[in-house]
Image 1 (cartoon, rainbow, N blue to C red):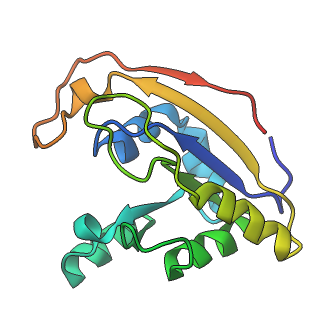
Image 2: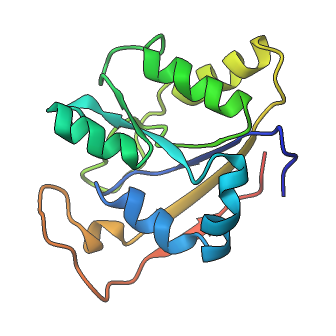
Image 3: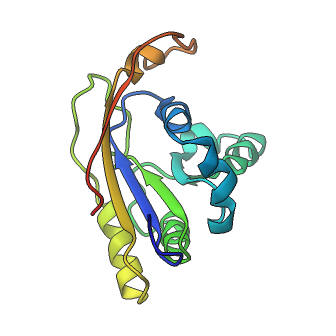
Length: 165
């Protein structure tokens, strides 16, 4: 549970292009989908513009799913990062993959600066620090392997949720 004005920042490893929405949707109880609109609905996330903003139609589609287009390698001063910080300031849920890319070998890669930047921006703006909830999952690379379109049905996924920070 978190206070109404407190944002939620979830972070996890990234091994499949289906981690979000697939894994997150399976984890979230239906009651959250019903009750979360009082906080602006379910999570916002960032998505590389190479995937989610290749065309205006694609960008509109992903925006309906609350995915903000961000330029890979474009730094932390991008409009999508400012938008994400503002969403946290108003108490929304933002999900990030701190590595900033899909891991092709399943190993945790180098963390990028985005999470720290968002936390600093909220603090500088005088907002309530968001709750940070880390989790780790395995098996999503079997559900949707990198570079393949088909979804593996009946595959096992394991998720470990850490303590809120």
